[in-house]
Amino acid sequence: MARPRSFREFSMTTAIRRLVLDVLKPHVPTILELAEALSKLGGITGVNLSLSEVDQQTETIKITIKGDKIDYLAVESVIEDFGGVIHSIDEVVAGKEIVEEVETAQDR
Image (cartoon, rainbow, N blue to C red):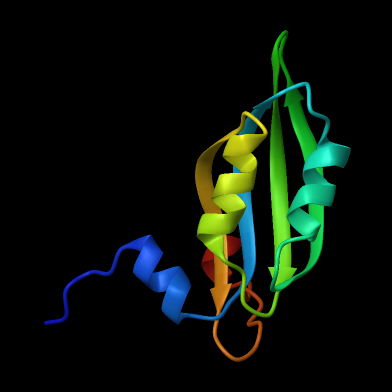
């Protein structure tokens, strides 16, 4: 049985094509500035940041990133540089093409 790989190993050897992250960050810098910084990373073709909750000093955002070979560690580093923390990785799409989730009877 193969040993589990770390996310570092996974992101270096696998073509991550889409990431959906739940992130907590301070109000400043803004999501505009964070979106710009993320969009400048290599392998990323687009980003979408959606504000989902606002507290007195922080905001929770959903970050969707699409690309050809997304470097998770670079994404994590930018988020941390902006004072944010990744609460969860909600979706990962990897491989030669993007496979969309299919609704099944159990989902209804």
